[in-house]
Image 1 (cartoon, helix red, strand yellow):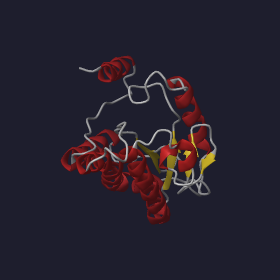
Image 2 (tube, rainbow, N blue to C red):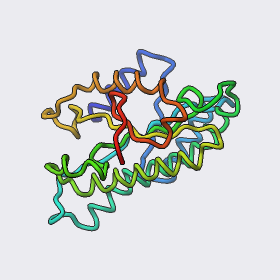
Image 3 (cartoon, rainbow, N blue to C red):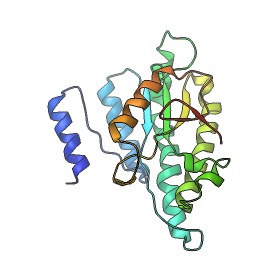
Image 4 (tube, rainbow, N blue to C red):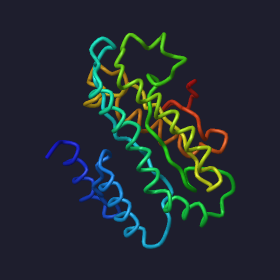
Length: 213
């Protein structure tokens, strides 16, 4: 068992209201099964919030990247969030339909895709000191998916936004990163309740600042 899984198990043991559900973001059957498991747990009520956080990262340059590397990044970082959104859409719709709130919000129904400033095409000149080609291309595609989800699901009352968590001190970000995990998480948790229809279809930083496409 890896450390993250053990930490989750420990949290679940301390908080009976938490339920772990297995989901493999590159396995459509696993995604569908996880949606069924979540529906069983909700007991006929809807689901308010889906956060797509699964992602892979590779330090690969344009000279070295190959088709397998690119496809792997797209499967996890783009196709996975797309399929998760599709699978959980009925539960999100149910939550939106059962809500008395007007407009869009994360407490009503929302999909939040964890993206990256490295997916911002406008910001490439200032971030290209880390080429990471497959990662930044897949995150740019995830940003486009977010925009399309926002336009497609707005009529169902579902907010869709992308969030850049910062360069975080995780296994992916490494300890060289400048942002502790708890600071990033606190920022995101403070930002999510403030999101509304004017934020849907946009990319935001963990500190609540808009990031250009």
